[in-house]
Amino acid sequence: MAERILVRKIAVGLWQWRHVSPQNQWQGDSFYTGDINLLAESVAGKTCWLVLDGREVVTQRVDVGVKDRKVLSKLVPFQVEETVVTPVDELVFAYGPLIDGDVDASYAREDEVAELIAELEDIGAEVPSVICDYMELDQGEGWVLLLDDNSLYVKYGACSGFSCDAVNAELFILALCESVKDDAENLPAAIQLVAETEDAIAQLRTCLPDYIENAENINIYEQEGGYWDVVKLQANPVLEYRSGNLARKLPFAQWWNDWKVPAIAASVAFVLAVGTTWGELHQAKKASQQLFAERDAIFRQVVSSGSISDPVRQLKAKLGKQEATDPSNVVYLVSKVAPQIRGNADLNVTSFRYTQNTSSLQFNVEAKDFAMLEALRGKIAESGLVAEIKSSRVSGDIHQAQIRVTDS
Image (cartoon, rainbow, N blue to C red):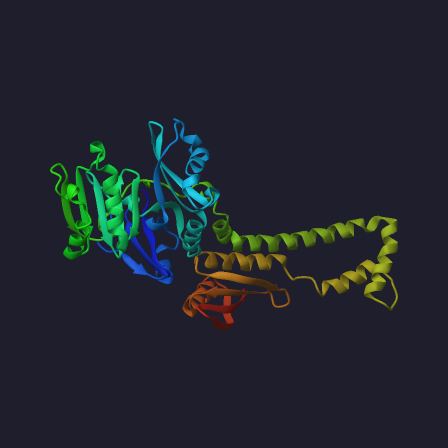
């Protein structure tokens, strides 16, 4: 298992994340909170599991009466259609195990989940999985009730739970307890109460009805902690929301970024090769009689006056002054420059030009700071070329420079 980062958006513009080792253990004792820029420094190029806000996720048990999981995506949305306000084709679904014709179905708005995924991918993160905050809690022998940062998180089954604002905690907890009050089989063997302080735990305990509090066969435990203290790390998500329209696609954009500079170099070489071949074919066709006549007409378009003695020789003499010195020179320069740019993912080439008169390669490049641009110039110079920054400017957080490269 590879290293991954669990990332959750806890408020507008505010994120929280924690690192998980390849051994599926927390890396260190700390989690991090910050804006999108601070998050980008930690997740760029790394694997992230997006943790959805459970208040935006609904879970319910659905009687589907089938044994084949393949039909769930076609059957369940229409089973729950009458219980939801949002059109089912605007929801993304996740499904638990199919047991005796019943399945725990969970759903959220597809556009909201897609927006969160896009925010992470825009800063360079890979997002193979999307999970729900309360689904990843460790429920122990029964239920876990967590009061953290003005939110209540509850998990009362392998794929069952909910989240709500803390002000509504008592109402939701009473509803849960009432649903199992007369069902001995679904009564929990234990209830774990978790909050950051003793006072918060006491507040959470007052939400339990007397028949739960005084039940002899229900053990109630208390623990001081927050959300990350109750998460149970698992190799696979309890429920996977990255499915359907949100399923991962081939990373064409990333492949293009990796091969953009070599592709430009290959394109330049191809154009030069095509131009050279065209010239050779043009000369080969001079043997035809018709082309002789057209040759003289073309010559007059170039040279309006003067005698015509040997038009081919005369045109060659004029074209020779304008031809590129050595088509291979640009390929040589690009082959030296491209690895230096490709080696740094924070560099972005915005334009690219070769000047034949000076045998120089000029390109505009963007970076996060000027030091990175200067480092690029130095690496190119170390490869045996002459590199100089012709101009530079700053636009917001982006530093831009024009670099000129020659082979001497």
